[in-house]
Image (cartoon, rainbow, N blue to C red; front, top):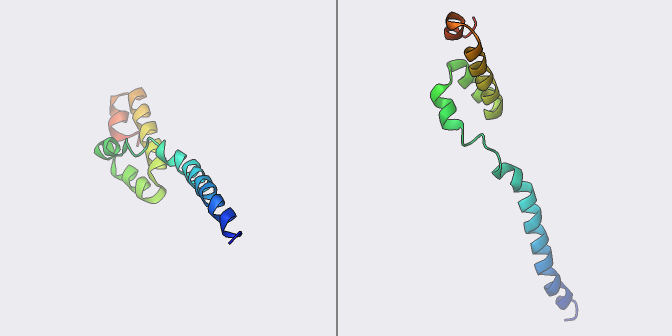
Length: 85
């Protein structure tokens, strides 16, 4: 019987520590804004950017997409429409 009392008292502390650890692990996942930008990305992305998304994941595809959007604003009209090809 005396062994059960320390276990009963330690259980809530262990559970609290586990919950705090899980919150620490999940915090970066909750703060990622890339999931919110996915619909806008899919509406304006070209076929090669969609292939990047499938192959490398959303972050790499979004980085390439926004880089291409910035380049289109800087380049003259004809090059901007063709994507610089």
